[in-house]
Image 1 (cartoon, one colour):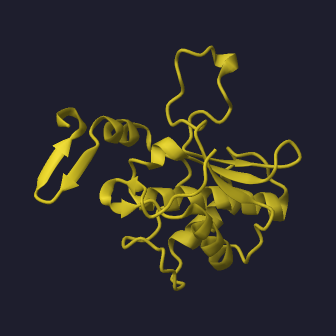
Image 2 (cartoon, rainbow, N blue to C red):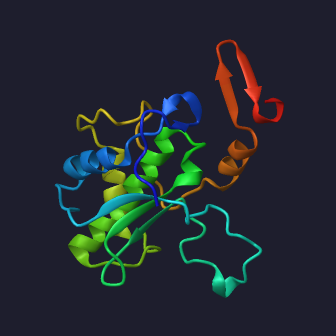
Image 3 (cartoon, rainbow, N blue to C red):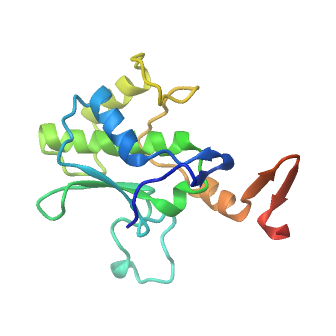
Length: 180
């Protein structure tokens, strides 16, 4: 696992830096979760993959495979939100923000209600999700189009397409990785 994104890292284009995930976590924790996620950390993970490896037998695949974000709970793990480092290198920062907030809702439900089922997207989850999506609090991290937190992380095709067609903008010229 590596540390959070910095100004030199890219997401989606040369001019879009990957947001600092630790600063985002602190920001969202204060605004939307009343600073209740204190024991949780947020980390980049190289083990999360959007698409499971088909070469591994099913029983040997990691439980975290198949999602760009995951929430770990005690007592088995230290409380943490993991974000797929490889998936977010090629995604707009809005996707990172939406998935981080999705995972923070899971962390909040664990802290307030003891819910550890990451697949549970019930009325409590939906209420928090809709509340953030439609909230009008001052939030300098809010994307122009607003948040779009949803029940499932749907990056599969886009991530693969963006990995295959990673464009670099250099002034007026656009060069794909195939022509470098």
